[in-house]
Length: 321
Image (cartoon, rainbow, N blue to C red; front, side):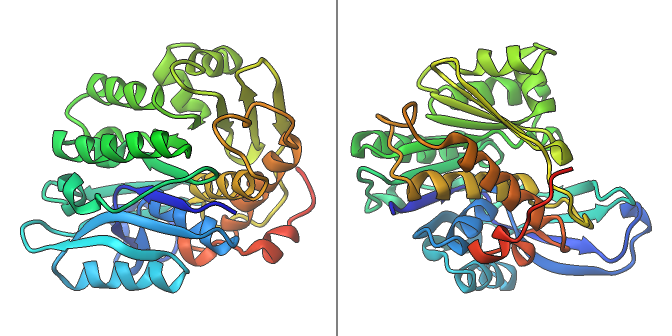
């Protein structure tokens, strides 16, 4: 199996105890978070060699984050520490229906100031993968660092994966976020979007039409997630694959989409996917079903990383809705 490198934000999720509005919360539990970090951990738990590329502040929160994802099996050699910026924080509440609400503290986030020179020794080969999202693309400096690894992944024959993971309150305008997300989506081989994100990015309210619009640039496959209703995979050759949701006892949807993406990437790498054969004769129905099981399993516990399952646990998810 090839290796996976994920790049982006690494932050503390302060999870409100119980269910309800964030403003009413009085107690919080500290957990490691950040969408690409969640993807990386899920892939690692499934047996994929995985490393994370990021930067945290020289503080107790940063140290906690490095220890947390390392304990989950992720290589943290390229998680840098800086005294110039702070570790990012997010406060998260969960509604009665399991849906999340966020409040972010990222104005001086260390992961917005990644330096490409810190990661010159990261190399990719055939069968490897690079994954990232939009949250850490807010600054020109961070975008330059991402561009460096995207180019290196391309040269090495690795697959490039992108999840827009749109967080509107972190950007100066929705137009800026849309522009950056579309620019970087077109640089990927595989794009994962929620159904609402697909509509926003393309202006197309028909999800099939929206997915087809995202099959541009170097994009060879688009996975559209639908929450409890599963996901659909669209290939550049016109084939589609659909998987309904799984019947589980959902208590918290935090990280479900990230777990789905980590499962999708890990399964593709396990089956030997590369940029040259990803639109070929892989068992796409099985790959999609496995990814959906990963996402469903994660919703059965509180917090993303602690709730992610290994291959044996995920295999026990069986009954579809």
